[in-house]
Length: 344
Image (cartoon, rainbow, N blue to C red):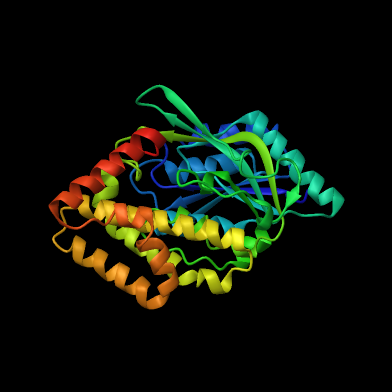
């Protein structure tokens, strides 16, 4: 049977939790034969991840593929799944996360209806939920106040997003041909490349559809997670890399046709630069501020308009105040945002 949806699962030493992710997809889909699950073993060497991937393929050979590669990092594993995908659509789910069964069934039905009608959306958006394991709480991100619900639309029909909500990787299901056409450049051994995935393909997406279901369950609570504050601070150079890829992907105000999409992308990129600014100040690296200054200088030279929007706006000013007092204010702004938005 032709595949309607390919789901990539990047796995790196994921033996402790990958079964839960895979089972949620199989059971949620009703073991649908038009679903394709691609388990990418990203050079795991410390546990049974490679063997588990092969075992899953042996159990469900018509649904599951096991792919093995040398360790390249999250982005390379995502793109390996894209390379092996055969579905009309593609979605990524990380191995420590999982899918809601009823929502997955609804997504599959919606994708099938697109194919039956010969009217394909380029991007399908669904909701996701943060599960805060340390607090025993959950927070759902929905888009029903920003996007038309249950119909095709274009970027010109979206409402302006506020500064605390964006279309993150967890929410996105791309038409596979569109995602491949974006030719994503995912740096090896780099965290936070999901921001590239959730940014670069957007101008290629001409027809969008928002399905208002809570599909993706995003686990937060492990101390080694990349969104953990201490981990993120230690990997600030990863965010510098990601920011540069996003920076050079577009001259936003020249290359993006839709004014609403250009405004959205500029807002998202501004947040990425703000993260670089905040966590460079947290960092113990002696060259952190020098590297941050170089990043801002590169943006100013590359596109003065983007620089002014990112650096001279409220967020850019609040996260780049000079001196010791400025650092305290920047950290205070971040702490307040963290408490309100609960983003890590």
